[in-house]
Length: 67
Image 1 (cartoon, rainbow, N blue to C red):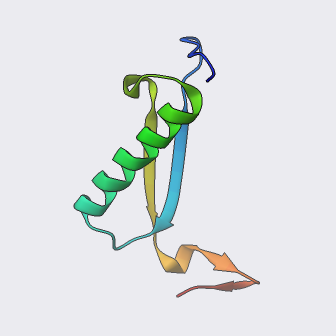
Image 2 (cartoon, rainbow, N blue to C red):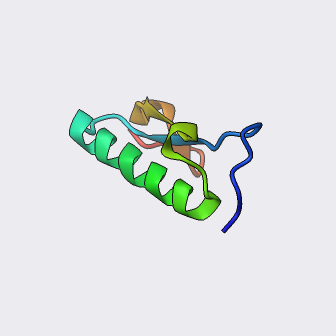
């Protein structure tokens, strides 16, 4: 297992469509934090998870918006 380097923090961005409830977001933050801690050997306090809700009209693929 890798050792935690206090000079670096695992910063994790999740970008997804709007509409998920707070319970889903909380569970996602919990599970992502746990996975990062297991992979990196850092304490949970070192892990930051940022969730960004994006409107489908602001998200496109193949030259077309999803909305």
